[in-house]
Length: 181
Image 1 (cartoon, helix red, strand yellow):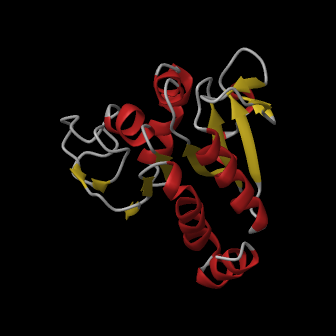
Image 2 (cartoon, rainbow, N blue to C red):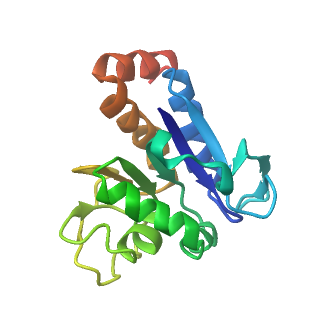
């Protein structure tokens, strides 16, 4: 199974790249995905990366996790991508895992109705969005098939939580130890 991390111009570099790095350290198959016209995507702090594939080449049937970094206007750009939003809704309806951090829990998942009746976390001040979510101040929240993270400082714990849910606590602990955590 492939784990997809979606990149849009304005993404938060720490959240995106930490997640990719930690999951790969855990031996998980990670594919970075551009929603732009090409593979180049520029982050909120002017770091440009070349994604592995374009959104058009994502095989949802092969997907384990769909992961959304935050950042602005990255989260807004993700939300404005109709094919990605459709993919998230289908994945969620199938009960498959989704993770979002920083602005993306609010800007993307909540506005799509995927967090209705759930507990979640997001970047401070964004939780005022009225969408039927029980917002928490925790750095990482797991509710059913959805993991949410608070922001850049939560990036490592966010990624390690995904590892734990996918590979187990032992792998999470091994990866954390190797990172001197």
